[in-house]
Each structure stands twice: as C-alpha cells, then as structure tokens.
Length: 195
Image 1 (tube, helix red, strand yellow):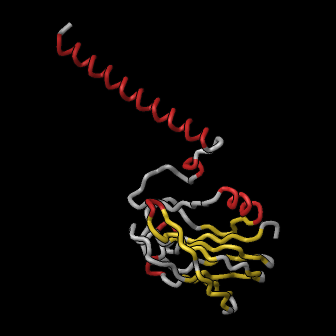
Image 2 (cartoon, rainbow, N blue to C red; image 1 turned 60 degrees about the vertical axis):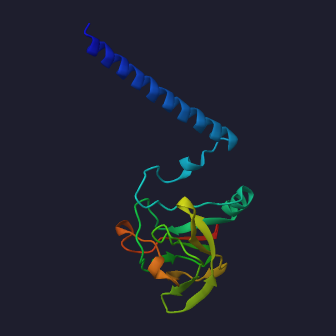
Image 3 (cartoon, one colour; image 1 turned 180 degrees about the vertical axis):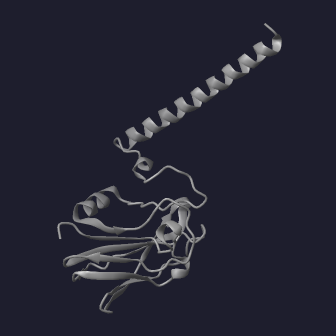
C-alpha cells in the first residue's frame, strides 16, 4: 500500500475519532444539564435552535416558582414572535377577545440591533371604539446575549370587554419586527386562564 494512501486513511480515521469524541462530549454535557435541571434542558423549550444573524427572542421566566405559579393563573392569548432576524421600527399589532378578558401581562420585544435600551417605556391598549387603556409603565429584562432591557413587560391586570385592541408602544423606533411579522412589532399578551 502506498505511503500517501495509508497516511490519508490515518488522517480520516483520526478526524472521525475527533468528531465522535466531540459529539459524545456534547451529549454528556446535555445529559448533565438535563439532570441538573430536573430533566428539562432550557434550550429544548425554545421554538428553534436555528442560529440567525440577529438572535431570536426568548422568554426568561426568572424564578422557577414564580413561573410555575404564573403558568397556573395566566395563558397567552396573542403572540406574533418568530425566530427570524429582526429589525427596528415595529408597527402596532392588533388582537381580539371574544368575551370579557382580564389581561395580566403585555410584553414587547426591543432588541434594538443588540444595543437594547438604557431604560424602558410604556405600553397601552387602544380599543376599536377609540378608548385607551393605560399607559402602563414597563419593567425591563435582558434579551438574548444579555441585551439590556430587550423585553418591556407591563402588568396591567385590566378587564377588557369583547372587541379588538391595538398595542401601543412608547418607542416604536426600537420595537423589533421583521418581514415574517409583516413589519408588526413583536408582542405577547397574557390573560387570566379560564376566563
């Protein structure tokens, strides 16, 4: 067997061994994290593991006990986020409720080209008849890559009559949107469950 052919086989075998060891190491790490988190690997709960130029939004629930309590008392009624790259300049989304609904939380996404924001603003709702609910001050939480104040969360706890509502953000210039959302700002609305 020629020396160069034998050398090529050795290189290929070494490369296969290295890739196998790397994959095994990733699997061991994932299983360790899964065990440490009582069987839940946080990144498996995201909509996708696809990497984009602009990180997709994710929800960091913070305290697990508070998240579990919140999950039992509220549920999403509107969510127009997607995993594609985002730009600034979102327009106001509209959602409908078919019966009186108590809105507990509204969360808008302001990734702002990885700069985030030094502070947060206000969120309000405008009914189809022109009545405005709010504005409500928001609390900021970091977004992907620890971008400061990427999430603006208002907790209005307001009961809305059946109808159509437009979400108004005090800083649409940094409100994340993309072509997949039709240029509409990323938002999530939660309401009391069972209502």
